Amino acid sequence: MKHLCLKLKVSVIFGTRPEAIKLAPVILELKKRLGIECRVCVTAQHRKMLDQVLDVFRIEPDIDLKLMRPNQTLAGLTARATIALDRYMEREKPDLVLVQGDTTTVFVAALMAFYHRIPVGHVEAGLRTGDLYSPWPEEGNRVLTSHIAKLHFSPTDLSRANLIKEGISSENIIVTGNTVVDALLLARRAIKRITALTITGLPHELMNKNATRLVLITGHRRENFGHGFESICRAIRDLALHFRDVHFIYPVHLNPNVQKPVMRILGNLERRSLPNVHIIAPLPYLEFLYLMQRSELILTDSGGIQEEAPSFSKPVLVMRDNSERPEAILAGTAKLVGTSRHRIVAETKRLLTDAEAYRSMASKKNPYGDGKAAKRIVDEITMRFCMRS
View 1 (cartoon, rainbow, N blue to C red):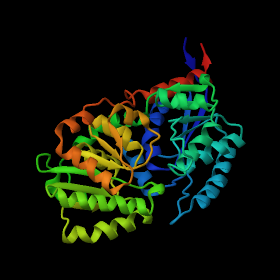
View 2: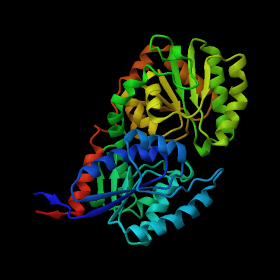
View 3: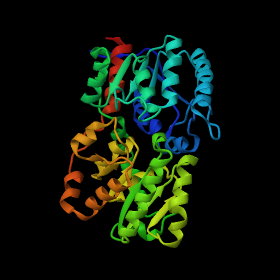
């Protein structure tokens, strides 16, 4: 039995780089389907980093709300998004709104869709830490969105179980895998072309795979602002002094709360006594994937990297006290180390010196899917919203 759409209008709404990466495969799949009108609306919650991903996947927004402001607050962004998305829903009148993840854009888009009685599909639904303030405000955003959404596209059985515990009907939860794996597979061919390029801010010889070992670092979580980032930076300094033959690459997030401690603790020392620490600007998506592939291991407080790195067989040390992605921890591809200077140093040293410990993490299978999540999501939408023939 086939499901045919006469004219189903699906609005895909997002505002940040991670959302764009994970929704790109869904948008491309929606655009393949006859009878589905896919409308792309971006809030541009993060302007520059969002645009880079849209260029990679050749996605052009139908509506750009341009909400980002310098030094924006959560309250200010939420207020602007509420007004803009309310007007958008009134004008567009979509049959379904799709959101992904846990940003302010996600929560406000879901809320405005609810106000307009428009069903919401939530991609990557059911991730939980159990602590409303960690990660903050993401945990709150996703919990609230789950109780508004009609369809819940969960990446794993564990995330499905989280939703059922909260009273979400199992009939509306579909386990799909994570679309980040789909995006990675789409991007892999393009990554190969980057090997001959010099990434801005890095010596060209570091791009030679046989030249030296690299450790890739990222950090941007709000709950780590202050003491957490200072501890992370001091751990990086300790490691760089101990492993003179290892290069530590840190694309630093644009947020001043991240930039200031990094530059104060590592910036000056980089020029004087730490030539193996490379502080660079945030990288475009493909360049970042190339560095992930080139690196030996990754230190991060990011969620998405915990999902991407296993596809490159890269161990991940998660600089957070808890994770909404326990699958990676349970599978052994990632390990929680918090922001403790001592623990970050100890666990990194272990992976850089103990070959068996390294192999144990690097050899594990990615628990987040097979790269067919987007197709499963669009198949489910078609089945539920389109006519049978």
